[in-house]
Image (cartoon, rainbow, N blue to C red):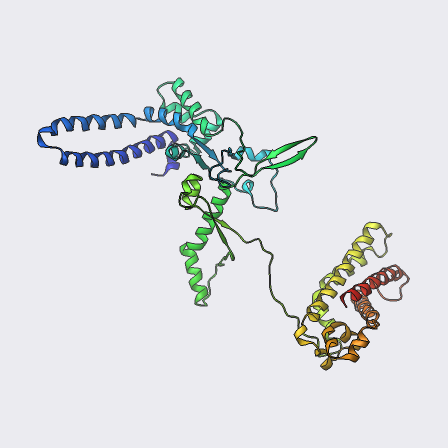
Length: 449
């Protein structure tokens, strides 16, 4: 049966009928066992009792009777999207149900995946596990809505159709609404609590676990791990065969467990996940990169630096060309200085990758680098070369490195430019900024040394 093609009232009747069928199956098995164990002279009396109990069970599961009982038990559970017991299974805190219409009250972030980003939040259930049948009833769907939607809206056509009177329908409606809201907001002592300053007092904030979001993530990852399509992609990758689709991999996933051997004590969705929740890695990318030693060629180091810095230099050049004839403002000067700082930082990082290779101290003896570059990039050579150490400690090489950087940058900015070229009177302001940056660069080189 496709529940989307049936009315909600019809699906409720079918749900109750399925529960009755399951109960009758168990009852009939137990009754048959009882008949076999009953002496022949007592069999007639036992059969009368069996049929009486069976009729009582059927009466109990008539829609109007079962719904009346279910509405009375609805207060034993809470329908939530954010559940409290993930923090501690014995907490008495209340949960929160975030519905679609509630999302309009909140500002959705474009940077983070959160509950507001999901179009359809799966609803979780906390409370008495014996009343989970009520939760399943409320989640029944038909005609484009669920019973939960109708109860939350305060008007249920489905209950009106099933009830024998409008008063009975209203009584059921009020009973089922007990599953949507707790009598009072409570933050138990076993929950996490934050006192947030507000004016002259404090707000007590109790963070809740986004169970619905976690369940959505769990289902998507589970499908990604175990679907037949994923298996096909993995086989193609293993066999080094072409496949037009992408294989999505989630590395370094952690699994968090809730509830131990009794996940049902936490929530209904936690039970469906067998108490597991996936945690995606939030670590930044990590890779090991060993810089190649700039041995061959007099411009070996600057060629390597150019590969890392040319994009920033290009942005700076375009920016300077755009503002060169304009009045200097603080905003423009700050932007210009920011780009130069980025180039200097890249220069120092590029050098550090070479300097930190302590196991290769002395490599510069076989290089084509200038003496200043050798003194700068091969500091571990000082550990065994006294003449080199003495020359390095003079710190004269720092000014030479700063001049080489200025030459590299001026070349990058003035090459084939109709506006930026050395000797232009308007280049003076830029040259003064560069000189100040070179003084700071020299200080940085002294610290690194």
